[in-house]
Image 1 (cartoon, protein in one colour):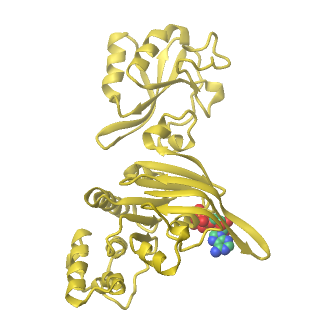
Image 2 (cartoon, helix red, strand yellow):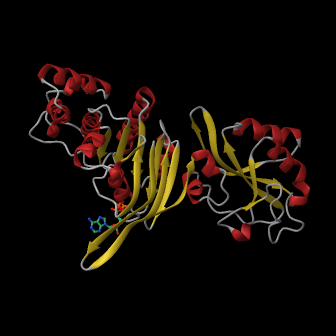
Image 3 (spheres, helix red, strand yellow):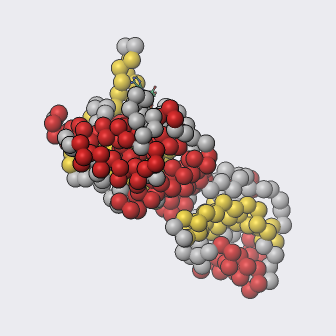
Length: 352
Ligand SMILES: Nc1ncnc2c1ncn2[C@@H]1O[C@H](COP(=O)(O)OP(=O)(O)OP(=O)(O)O)[C@@H](O)[C@H]1O
């Protein structure tokens, strides 16, 4: 639904070029919620502004719903932009207009007449749960309500794509959750494709099907949450589901398990303990239920050396889990013990 190809953007500032985007290849599938995370200055805002050509990229292409926006000129671009909604961190509402009038503004620009415009704005306010505040002014609304108005306004042109630029960053955690649920509902009800940028991992965890990590104007990791979890050493998976440092200690085997939604954590662990008569210690877990499926990571310890635990480890693998045998001395990244992988250094014989 949204594809960028080798997208570059350089700004000229004080006689030098600042490279904000350095060849971004992004692919957002139709109907998904896609989150882009990264530190301040990574290029997230520039990316989202290039997707609807609020910023013209220096080079590269942007295709939305099959249309190459970079090839369009003024009128064509204006029409194409009408099919892309955008919500902003600071809402960007007009303070002298009521809620209803704010939502009507893009409808005016689209050429809808009085009664039709008013009816459509009413429907949009209903959709975001604000029908009863139509006559209020922005100053009389809470932050969450203002963002609902911003979302209603963004949906005025019946867009197939919604871009969200840190839409929840100015909101408290509870309001953030309610806005994220609203975005998820709209995604499902309307089949809306959503591209959002955020610096909060919780936002990704709560609503996103897929995510990308940006650094220095590039996408360094990208995929569905399940794909990221299945990627050895994925920084995003580690940040989304943090389970901390590998504790040191001899006489036990520390194992990281990754759940992709194919099996549920609790029965697997209790079955392991019962069937193999082994004391399983849970050292940490970051498991979420997303779309009714359990995904995340869990760190467990089994008594004894790796060689003593070959059979239980085999059982865990048979359950379709990703199984990494962690090395305490290499705390940051656990070592993959998937079949076919080379034996990790320092593990006699290597896990198999
Ligand atoms: N209009 C501009 N003129 C010059 N440099 C700019 C401009 N806009 C962005 N930049 C620079 O481009 C780089 C990327 O900025 P961008 O705002 O896209 O990052 P970001 O990841 O969205 O950061 P933040 O989360 O702080 O908004 C930064 O080095 C920034 O200073």
